[in-house]
Length: 167
Image (cartoon, rainbow, N blue to C red; front, side):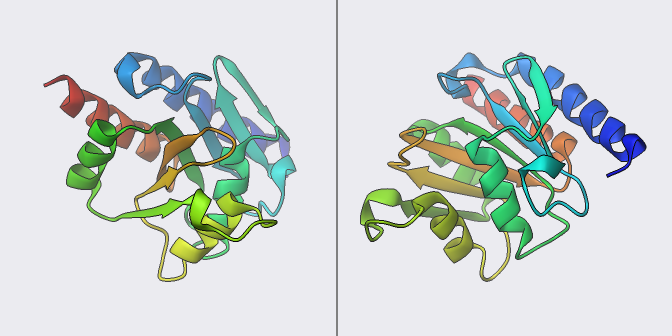
């Protein structure tokens, strides 16, 4: 990773993260919206930038990092993901707006496997959806992952969802 690439990724994720401050508080999970952006050659967390609650950096162990690295195995152009709160109102709005939405329930997976990585891989076999509704996730208790090629794409989708929920 060159310093220029790293700088561009950090600048892009910071800008998108800053835009998410305008999101409806209703969609923000307890820990804040997590946003990840992978470098083009990312194979591990060292090459994925994460923005969460004002901090930004590479090599952070966040669930969104594992999610985007898993999704990229099926579509390398998919480089960004954000995590928003899960409840039925939000999930229904995501389904209406994005339409290409997949779902899984972590409680239905076999014990002893990483449910999140397995769930994302299972759902991405036919291509990476616009969003994944992940119910009963051990890390967050449940969340909605919003995918995009860039953090700007993800932020735009999240803000559209947020706006729809306030109407």
